Length: 199
Image (cartoon, rainbow, N blue to C red):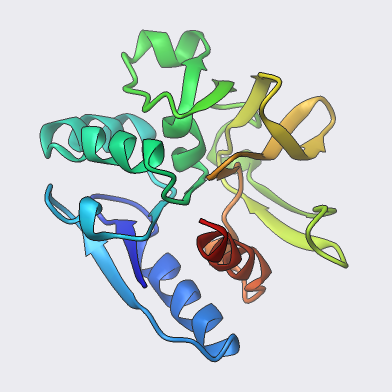
């Protein structure tokens, strides 16, 4: 099994570390590769789009030729997880801010996103939340977090804060508005690893 982490910008090492630890907990091993240029995505069995600056990430994905490879991987059923900025990039539609900045979107989930749904950096927060695939609350770290504000019928809403969707799944695509890589709780990464076995 080969798991690719998009490594152009953002929380790359944190995701690599979390995946490695989750694999160890499961008694498994895998190649974890950092993807900085085209040609690597087609060799991966799963992909992670980390948090970071979504406009920059989107632009560099296009520039490096990785964007189209991710779309092809998604069509082939490869599991893909996006966190924070990754949730934005996975969406089909965006809010006014997305349009204003000419944000590149991969269009892989039938969702509309609000890029700054929870305010600016100083309004970052942590909260405990329920997720249907976990047996106890999860401590989620939100940093200048986005949210899904509209989702199509094929999107499974996994969690909300007020009326904002902060976790969702559509087939092989998984999206979180928060940063699971910034906690010691590996359950979300283990859930993603189990998705790989499904496909």
